[in-house]
Image (cartoon, rainbow, N blue to C red; front, side, top):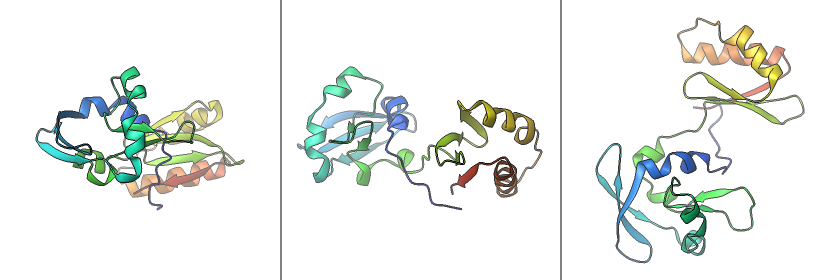
Length: 165
């Protein structure tokens, strides 16, 4: 299995971040006392030096109150976002992986993701049909065996699968 590599799309922090983290108090220009809304408890967040300039621009966050207060657009990279407190982010963020698998078409385009344990997210009709006919009916309890079977089935259909730990 491959180690997960973030694509910096920011979607995890755009949709859930504001529900997970609340800034209680600014301690210094870079340090914040934060509350983990769902799991409780507080943590100290420190904006990384390399992201300090990006963090100071709060215009996007004002437009999007659901965003994590520490998510920012990556300067000079359209459509990419960074966690400005990545090294001091809370456990709930450290343990989150946005997908268990990425599925690529023969030409290398990403055409689907498996989110959660076994839920396909795709706009590719052929992949959706293959999934519905050949993957969804699988009755394999073991996640390891299931991932291997998914890779085999989708491989025969012309897809490449990257499964993550």
